[in-house]
Length: 223
Length: 177
Ligand SMILES: [Fe+3]
Image (cartoon, rainbow over all chains, first blue to last red; front, side):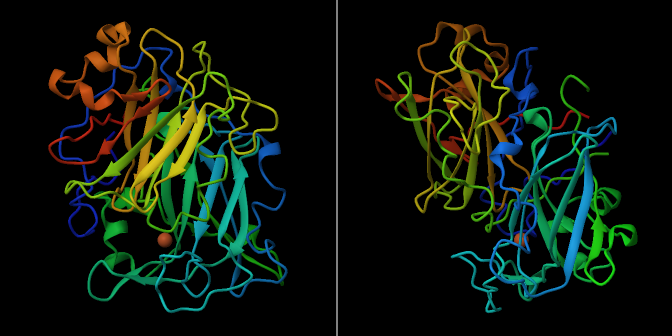
């Protein structure tokens, strides 16, 4: 199977030329007890009860379109990964991050921090309640806008599977103009980052829903 | 086909770093060591927006299976550490030297401008086992020292990560088919 990941060096994304390694990667000959073949584990007692509901972390409701985002974390053989830590962060509905270095002149939302965590259940499922993030401009090139996205960070069963990525929303007109999305060479691989609208998970009179599965890479022992 | 990686971007600060992140062990732990370093780009400039994660065995070479990194709850060793770099590109960890003939710590670095993380290892200086370690031995001889921490004090080490350039750190493949 060809590597679906973007290369380190992708000049249309202007931050890569000074940060991309230039030497060939070394193929590691991990022994059976290499630490990279196992993953840190996290427990429910380490998370707050409302960590997976980004709409209830303040005294009021955040502005925006409420959405439920669900999906499964799967290994390379399609088997669910239970008890995996999933962390997310995102801009608010206006496309603004609550971050000191953020300069986009869109409004902050006092009721939205935009960060959440959960552990997958026995079937590998995660579930977040949040608001749909807005697109936002960035300084990469003239008139550069990021398609709406939620950042995801996932632990699997091996440290080699550790994944940080971004989930997008179906039909976004900004895909064609976004070098971060386009850095993934294969179109089919790119589509793996686009969630699908999920009518079955919507809650009448309350929330829309999107569904997105995450497939972790093969570990060296599976390869 | 696995889900492709995307950059961590610049705005992870409210989500990924946490108060106990740099503490794999509390500093009062009798065997605690300190590892500090910087993440630098191809022009030698420090990265103010990188995230460094480490993962390691305990002093007996055992893997922590009980959690406790996010909220320690009485456990004194978590095995996992996470530290965002400061404005000058500095990161640090309070940890212990893992067990084994060639002790090492697995490292991942995420940053704006890295479309996927870089993976490396921290080895310790003066360990006889380093010479026969299978992972270190597979690294070209002239680049092996990029994986070995520099001893700064009896219990303190320095490990800089050079993403690119003359002193580029050795990074390992993370895609296995
Ligand atoms: Fe973003």
